[in-house]
Image 1: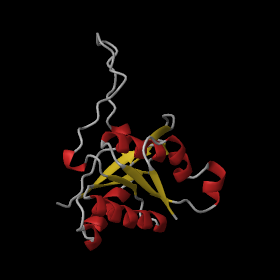
Image 2: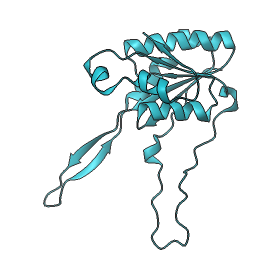
Image 3: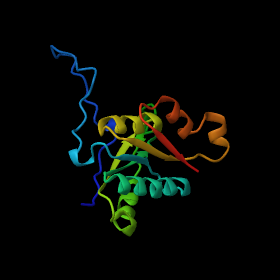
Length: 175
């Protein structure tokens, strides 16, 4: 059972409050239910980089050995862009990241994923928060991420380091 699923990023699903409604919107927006076949699986952060490919390879082996499913998470880059139309003031608009569709197609054709059942989950937002949230939703046994190399990780802190500090489940950082 191999395949992939594309979920809308969380920020696209937020309902707009109706000021005339009697009841305000609930503070907690409900998430879609996850497939029970992937409960207690292995969550892996994947963006197509070399370090995330190594993390994916490790997570595949881990899921195969534990006979569990693999939840591949891509946190989409949604950059605000300024749009200016005539005399109206500029407006900030989220530009969707279509990289998840490309990654999904690449993963669907990958022979190395034939050994384990897997799904691809797309999220938008903070990478650490979204990986931990997916781990919580699927009651994952572990989260696997690649290490961050470069100056950005040293200045702002790596995703792996921040995730290891805040996660409620084991985090494996693959160099």
